[in-house]
Image (tube, rainbow, N blue to C red; front, side, top):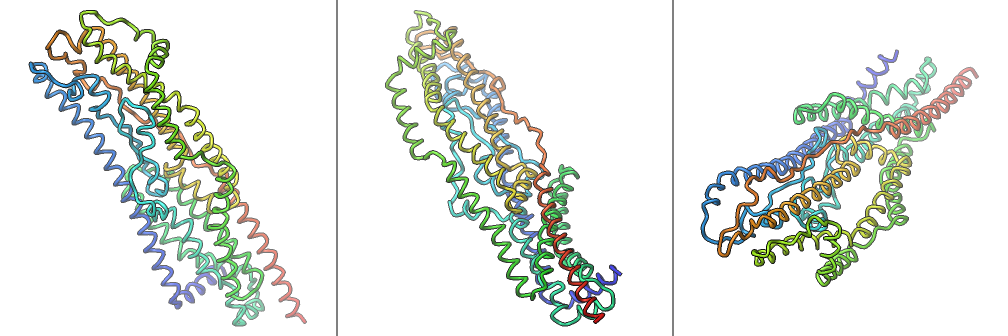
Length: 495
């Protein structure tokens, strides 16, 4: 019986021109979303690969030119010398911290355009590089990227509404429903078979294109990840189909069903997330970035004006660096004290800015926690959180990347600080009057390299279970109303 209903429904649908238009739109937009996602990921991977190649080229160039540098007789500025620890530390270092893209990154790229995936490292204050983002037109950031996540969250519900709003109501308006019910066909069975057939026409091409694109362009993606994506799509589609069934069960006209479903989509997908964002930003207001920049400049000026105090505090924290240089190399002391002084000033500035950096971090985490708490109020935010987590472009993974970058930055500073102090002790920077400084960094491979350690993260299914729970409630309510409709129709037929 169910198969007969489905075949009949499919036959009727194939006559509808609007259905073909919806299928074409589904195929085109899902293909475009998949293409945009994979193109963006390919661009990011190319940038990361280019930075890694640049780092390797710098290492190879250093090895090739070492003999020529050792034979050098004429003076050379230390800031132009790639074999000088000071030149490398402050100007010439080619050292990148990269965040590799996950194989599933093309699913949701919406936040990756404002979250840098690599940093060029130098021995400087962390504020100098951690807040440097790629220059992008603000309108492009506002509009965002049309990726698979955008298509699923915003467009898929409209497509499902477009094919399901007149299910059952069309038969009721034409008088066919009464005849079908007199023949023993319940409204519940008819409606759910109609919704399954109509939704399949939209969901099947979407799943086919998105899964095939992932398997073709993300060769290392796991089947578990693909299965998770399929489950997310189906769970989200079930929610909207259950909501459609609930609205249709009231027995109103097709126009009424379409209006209510579109208004509901507008509320769940646009209004509720916007209100949540406004509430979160209002309750946890971020400090002013302009004020942050002003404070940074002010603290930097104060550090410059109190160099002696900064150096005293720095040598108190690092007594191993407070060794007196050989008196025969007094001229060298000026150069070396500049390098150590610069690192000390960088450390002092970071320490002075620590309360302001912590304030931004605390607000960010508070906003993230509130967003997680209230994300249950909208199916769109539930799916968005799950897709960002699955793609690896979520905020938590980026925060973990930033923490590892800062740890690497501290490792670089410690390496150059200790190496410069030891080279100064040996008199390498000015072995004699008019002599060329010795090579103090013969092998760039000695410099610490960044290696991103992937944290084990899994997409939480708790929110999806809530989504399915609401879908179950909608289906139960729709079943109750349709059963009541069936009983009333049976009673009237007996009379």
